[in-house]
Structure formats: C-alpha cells, structure tokens
Length: 467
Ligand code: NAP
Image 1 (cartoon, rainbow, N blue to C red):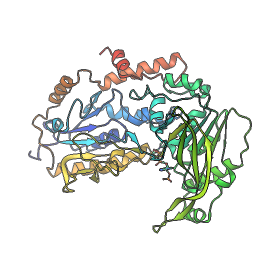
Image 2 (cartoon, rainbow, N blue to C red; image 1 turned 90 degrees about the vertical axis):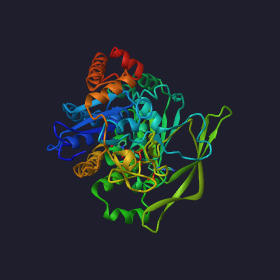
Image 3 (tube, helix red, strand yellow; image 1 turned 135 degrees about the vertical axis):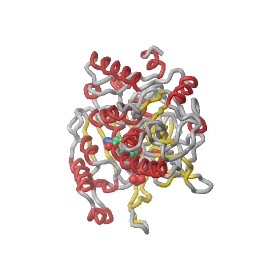
Image 4 (cartoon, rainbow, N blue to C red; image 1 turned 180 degrees about the vertical axis):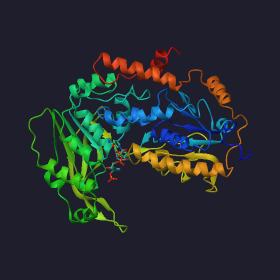
C-alpha cells in the first residue's frame, strides 16, 4: 500500500479497537489527535453498552468517577468514530475477519476474571471472587444472576486493594445511601434485606504496604451506620515499614496516618462493624455439613525484606479462627485470552513491547496488532493511567503506519465492515442506540429519585431499543 495516500481522505487509516472501556476510548482519542492523518476508528464491545469498568466496575457510590464518560462521549462524537456494541470477537467476528477490513487492530479488553487464591475450601458455597460481586452489584448482564448469601452476619474480604474497599463499603452502606447510587435495582433490593453486620477486610502485609489509596480508606471512617476500626496492634508499624516510609510520598504517609487514626476509633454503636486487619493470611476455609463456608482459619504474619528490598509477609506459628459465612477474595483481576491473539498465561496479558503485540514464537511484533490497558500491562492503576498507556501504544502505531508497516485489508471501505457486522450480528448496537438507552436509564432513575436505573440484561436492552 503506497504510504503517500494512506491516512488521506481518499484512503483513511482504518483502525479497529476491541473493548470499549477507558483504555479503548483513550486509544481512540489519541488516534484522533493525529490531525495530519485521516484516521477512522471502529470500537467494538461484546456488551451492548460502552465504557467497560466505568459502568461495570467503578463503585456505584462513586458517581463522580463515572463522570469521565462525558470525555468518552466527546470522543464518540467524532464523525470518524463508530461503535459496534453487542459484537464479540471470537463469536461474531474473528481476528482474520478484522484483517480484511482494517490496517491496524488494538486489543483493549481489560482483565475480565479474578486471580485464584488456592487455599483449601476456597470452592465452598459462599466463597466468591470479589470481581463477581462487583459485576453483580453494577448490573453486568453476565453476572446479574449470581447468588450471594446476604443472610450471613459475618463476611470476610481478602486483600486490601481498592476493590476490597469497594466491596466492603457497599456491604456496609445503608439502603438510604445506596438509593442515591446507580447500583443495579436487584442488588439494591437484596442489600436492603441484607443481614450482614460485620465485615473483616484482611491484609496479608502491614498498613504501609496496603494497596488501597488514602481517600478510599478515609471514606470507610465516614459511613452513615457503620463503625470502622483497626486493631491497634495491627496498625503499628514494624521497624522495616518505618524505614520504608522514610522516602514515601505524601499520599503514602497520609494512608498510614488514616489507618492509625482508625485504630483509635471506638465503636459508637452503629448497626454494622467494619474491621480492617493487617498481617493476616487466610490458610483455609472451613465448611459446614452442607458445604457452606462457616469459618476461616488465619495465620498471623511478619514482614521480611527480600534481597531486592521489597517487604513481603511470612507466616508465624500463630493462628486464629474467624466465624464467617460469606467470603470475597479480592486479590486482583486477571486478563483472559482472546481467540486468535497471543497470550502470556503466567502474567494474564497479551505479550507486547510498547503496545506492539509480540509473536510468542519469535518475540517479534505482529504486523498491525496492538494492545492497551489492563490486557497490555496487567490490572493496575486508575482510569487515568490508561491515558499515557494508550498514548504509548498509539504513538508506536503511528510510527508503524508512517513506515508503511500496516495490514493490507482487501476491503478497507467503512461500509464494507458494517455490512459484515450487521450480517454476523443483526442486533448490533450503535453509539446512537446506546445514547437512547442512556436516556431511558436516566429517566427511569429520575422517576425513582436515583441517578440512573440500569438495564441489566442484554434482552432488556435490545427490547428497549426495539431490536
Ligand atoms: P490491587 O490493588 O492489586 O490489590 C490486590 C490486593 O490483594 C493487595 O492488597 C494484595 O496484597 C492482595 N493479595 C494478592 N494476593 C494475595 C494473597 N494470595 N493473599 C492475600 N492477599 C493477596 O487490586 P484491586 O484491588 O483488584 O484493584 C485493581 C486496580 O484497580 C488497582 O490499581 C486499584 O487501585 C484500581 N481501583 C481503583 C479504584 C479507585 O480509584 N477508587 C477502585 C477500584 C479499583 P499484596 O500487596 O501483599 O500483594
């Protein structure tokens, strides 16, 4: 393909992005910043709705964070942008199909599953990945039918990342607090009936190593009808942690300060108790005669420094048993392989160099294939982290395009791929369709004095659109 014309109005550079979460949108935004090239972007998602984890992951009581969708709407308003929702790679369309229609393909499918814990009993009834609970309360169509036994009084959340905090906070909010959110309507009803009274969040290392951020832990101390406490002896810093904080930034120091403030809290008689623990690891879940989790055995840990200087936990010979009827393991998300796309199974990511997908056999870049977001770098960082990440990928894509290193699609016309998509998935959802759904959700919310009432099944979404 002569490079003189690729990227011109007559021959736009055609890009497919698979996965319409923040990473996909930021990649589109960066592509559109290349104003000397004419670039057309088709953004695909297996769900009819865009925005990925902003819709299905960000906690419903963090509505402000969700307002980032206004920026995504502006990207989608570009006349060279199209959304193909309800179209799944591997089900409706393949990588080989895409190669016939696009010069470049970006995979931005995030991390859709959880990391396993691998302790005895973690498959008992009542033991769940936190990721499933998050997707359930956010109304993700694939998780709306999950069952969580909220008749249990005592719950453990394993891990001290921001997801663990979200899960614990949602369990400890009052129905009035939840009413002000866009939590799925069925989750609101079930949480209204919840008998959960005690939530234990379990960190295997100390306060200085907690993965959550300062504002998130501070919020735990401000819940309407829940007392949050930290056992004072677990809030104390050991000498290794004290030394590690010498070079820490303000946010890290503030986080430890907040934990220590919480350790001075005394319960004030609120209906629920949230207990933030440190230096404990679950070693076994114990079930009752029906195979339902009833207890968790914990080992107390101490910290040690590795040769590289990082602080890790190691078990002592001190154990304790916690009575819990519901367990959420919140120890990180994990990417899943995409059909026809290389995958590094140990890291749960697509092998890549600066976003260029690598051939696992040769470790050389595969022509025209790129990745960004969690499926590129692993499940770390906040929504904004995806912006520089997408910039790195897109800058490499533009360098490749300028050097003529692109796929050679046989049918590069925008109309050609639309015909294929409509043939494979007649119920494709466009961005205009999504905007109609969005308006309906907002007006359903208004009727109930809530920010939004979501459609939570694909069938309901399609029916609302008259498809
Ligand atoms: P994360 O931040 O990586 O936290 C994972 C937690 O699991 C860590 O505390 C980790 O402890 C612990 N863990 C891992 N393996 C364990 C094991 N075998 N036993 C016990 N504990 C174990 O992951 P995340 O909470 O899923 O969050 C993912 C990303 O989304 C993060 O970057 C997070 O900040 C972001 N996020 C942000 C927000 C927000 O900004 N409000 C909300 C949600 C998520 P170690 O440190 O000891 O490994």
